[in-house]
Length: 336
Picture 1 (spheres, helix red, strand yellow):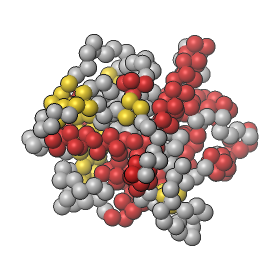
Picture 2 (cartoon, rainbow, N blue to C red; picture 1 turned 180 degrees about the vertical axis):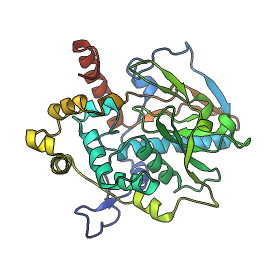
Picture 3 (cartoon, rainbow, N blue to C red; picture 1 turned 90 degrees about the vertical axis):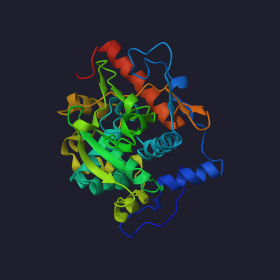
């Protein structure tokens, strides 16, 4: 699936690959599969949205904001595909992957327990696993590889218990809410959007939460004068693929209970996760904005939605939704 660009070091058994460069070359060579639009491909129920306005919004933005939305959409695609089994704390990803997304998160956080940006990126490099903060760190590293004049900010909102990235700074009147762009590939079907339109939807409870970065902690701020450190960007450009068999073997080494019970990736692991102590802290957040939202470039008149998904991401969401519906029909709730 991925093209190798440089050899790994002697401490790694597989060559390294660069997610962003792979995306660029696949697009250039016509090797990338066509994307799908979330709002065309899924129903609102599949996207975990309880209520939608009858008609989508159309929002006029300046040329720079439109360009940032396009870049954010690309980053969403690249980051989403880098987490090959999905997010480790998203219920649908756990169901669709037989618990592999959770297993990758366990391996990653066990090996790199610190919570700083470099450790988050090392989690992706090692096991392609993590949660929202890991997705946000990789997003920032992808954005660092573009010649942006706007600042890139990582935000942790304690009230939502969620981390995401921004292109622009809402405190700066040049950007504000209307011209700051949200990059949040952790959700099941990510769409690039302006901060003014960012709403995290909980598919289980139906709760909708507005993004309020002013209430959060800035865990990373990068701009042309103070870019992301080169060593961190380099980690994001050298990912070492771990296949499912390796995940299974390494999970058994770090988890005595699973090893003793002979539980590996599949239905048994999903049952273990659902009975586990963290089962109540897993999420079912599939969108962070209305994916039908149209943005119009004031300069050119071009109109687009920014909800493109890879076929792999779309398939994972659909399989996870089907599995969740089966649980709800037979059990009525997620946790046993």
